[in-house]
Length: 111
Length: 109
Image 1 (cartoon, rainbow over the protein chains, first blue to last red):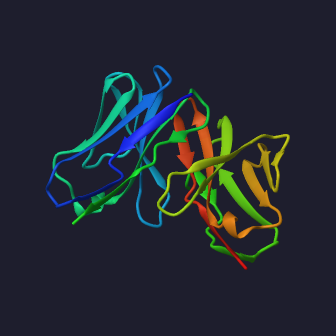
Image 2 (cartoon, one colour; image 1 turned 90 degrees about the vertical axis):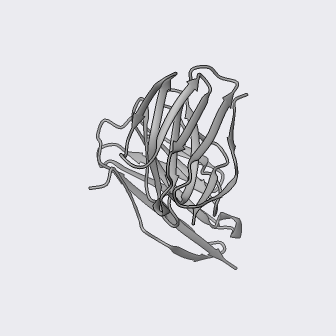
């Protein structure tokens, strides 16, 4: 069966510091991968999605970037965090046009 | 106009009540539809898929009306454990999945 791993669960970072969140999927090949962000009390905002190695689509221009160095690995990065980057970050995967499966999420607090 | 819109909530209901959530979507070419449940500070989890013929899973019934671009979720005999945020989710085609902002439900004893 397919599983998705996301880490860390909680992260506290100072403003201006870099960020790297990693997500890996097991049990499937060539998955569609996604990064979402959820601000406190708000809905899920799609940040990036990827349909293959090195293929990244950005939905919202902002202080973040994504990379897919391997088929089942998806990384969310920032060179310098802003206060507004705080939120709950969720990695997800799905078969084409099917339902999404989420990782357990990373709660990021930028102070 | 948002791509997926839901009742803002919150809904406060007593145990045993029946509660209905509504959702509308703007893209008539949308292809698949789901309801997710999200507990506080947790990842969303699939509650059920939604079909035009309607589908039921225990106390939960979901319905899709493609002509009206409308999705509903009915919860019967509410339990305390049903307290959560319910997210309406639409696949607009292929890769993109759009979430509604969610409707918060509080079930009280």
